[in-house]
Image 1 (cartoon, one colour):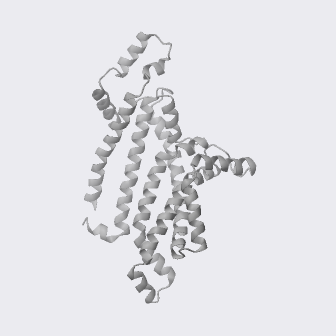
Image 2: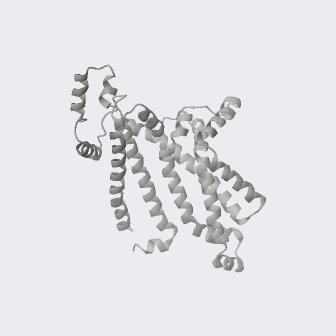
Length: 308
């Protein structure tokens, strides 16, 4: 098992290099001069050219990319073109807010989506199943920014239960987490239902019921455990997606996370911030997928036996 983990960690290297190359290429060919952004459009051309030379912007593409990767490996991501602060300080200062929001959204999705999916599978085509699948379809289709605005109007402006924006307390976290977790909850519900329907029709489930086991033991110990692999896959993918896909939610609720920072950096053509932010999110997503793969071995002993 340790060899498998080491091999997966080794395979993360080409993935991260590929992501960094794509992002660096996009930012390299994007119109805009970082030196003019820092000095202003009315700065003398001599000063702009001197700054470009000092920042290495006149170097060839390959030289600049190798320099970027070398600095990133040493933990040096440069300075923001807008705030002039170290990029690493800005990113790691915002990342805990994004991580807490994504974790809360996934927790809500799992706590609600899995039980509803199980009940829907057990009571297939019942009124509960039809209603829950209808709400799941709405949850998948509903845009996050629209849901966030409607929740602000209802729970903040009209009822005054929660603050409309900000960061720092549990009350600030509730509405953004629900907004961000709605689509994930719908996907987890649908996947749980589909996976459970496939399992409950197996022969060993009928055998367990024929032996006189209670329905709770049949469902929780036998059916759910064997249906967890696709559910865990979806949960892991959603968590990784939420780490990098919370841009709209963070913008609507003024949440000081990495997603909002990236939007501002793209709008202001802050190249070092964009490149380093995408690289950080790619690493986080890859580590989440690695954790999901390791979790497979503890859910299904057959998978663990393959690596002994």
